[in-house]
Length: 64
Image (cartoon, rainbow, N blue to C red):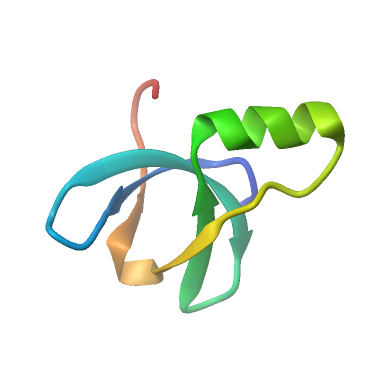
């Protein structure tokens, strides 16, 4: 998945969240929330994210 792509993740407990891809590391996709993504873009730095297993991350459809 390409950095910046909007995705939907299923967190532990089953709740679905829309997030942005920071990095695709193969079996792990690093994601962050929209606020962190926008702030990092403005500050010209890499967003701080957390890794999720690829099987928990799907490309999102629609807006955040």
